[in-house]
Image (cartoon, rainbow, N blue to C red; front, side, top):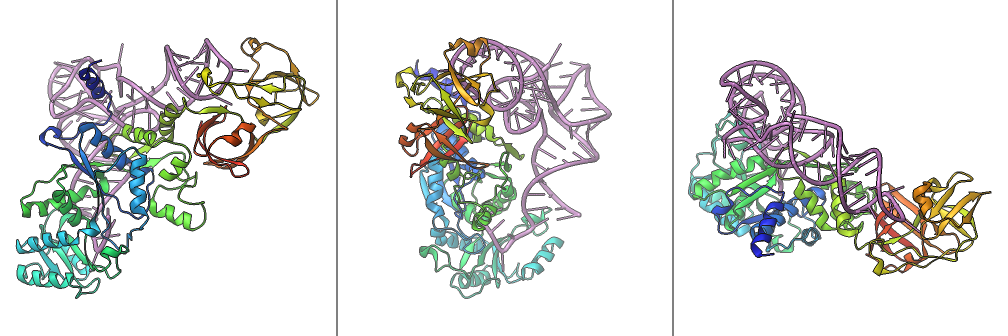
Length: 490
RNA sequence: GCUCCGGUGGUGUAGUCCGGCCAAUCAUAUUGCCCUCUCGAGGCAAUGACCGGGGUUCAAAUCCCCGCCGGAGCACCA
């Protein structure tokens, strides 16, 4: 196949729409701008997945820029910075640059000074409520026309730490009668008394608001395409005023709706998750019942599968429901070929076994004979799942072992040929020896399940993903005395 | 109250800008059949949608109007 043909094929395969005006830019530059207060859940993953995918598609560039400009209300978690970069890697992408807004305060101050000098911003000591009333009435506050020199002086005093929180702000001068009240003279800087948790930024008290900070950064970092949620729909319009003062061109912007999930009982909100975990309702951020990326990773779900599912959601502005089955379907495709087969019996019912071979030899993987067989000792009895116990007098085929008949509360080996499975509808079930087995806890979204597995499961290295036949895929998480496995999906 | 976005099968998506090739694409889901020593994989098939009402037009998912429904913003949060 020629290179040209292979490119054509790629061309047809990406489900994401083209970026607007992509060919007008020499390089597609994007930013992924998380707040570092927690590691990511599936909602955040959309950002990493889509931006990363566009980067690859356009051979572009993206910065992971932590917009950590609120040391108080949205206080950053020092562990989250690295955790989020890890989350992005898990999804399959590497940021071209990692930056922190809290390292860039001087840049924002400089921009503010220039904006004030251009009469594009003014300091304002109105109490919030008072200003809000004036604003809603479309009336300017008394500070609006004080002139750049006074504002400049007061702003320098803000930077110097001469004000306390709540005493003063710097506002961008937009249009006080703008028909959309959300755009009228918005706050660009305010005073925060609480020190930033990062040592490097702990001395600053005058902090920019998101709209100002990210507006400046997007320009300074040469961002061509902004991709973000609909909650920031008005941001572009607010920032446009700043861009106009500076004569900058605003990047292309895409907004998408919120993602909701099926299959989970918990809300997908970082703050709610923190609350629930702190309340002791879950084991931690990677509890299998949580829709976090660390949880999915622990369950043996590949980041690529998450990315693929996110890409399928597209970038529409309406809210979307992500079906977990979409993540699972993508993951199954990725792991099925590698996942060795094993038997796990949950809530086993024990039956004495009369007759039959000493050893069962089911294949390691039915599609890969070359990987050989598992040699499973049988012994004097077997465990099967309650639903798999056939009615008295009926037969069942124990996988890899043979056909047995349920008689007098025991399984009696009958030397039937495999044809009975097809011709006489004998069910095929999995089983574990009652004499030799491995205790196992399967951690699932619905809680922990205990069971026993074939003995070989004790030797599977931690981190390996296996398929428990007729149960589902799981990742081996621990081998300490007994096996702990995290259930991925069927 | 003011402003801004949206509404295609169970779910997501394509098509909407530039009306006809759309009795609507693809994926997932569900069901059935085939295959199989798995309820996994593979193969085949079926199911299922243009929010409603008007208008323009030879022709509307697509354009216009009016409703209805949903989301977002109007923070010294991000």
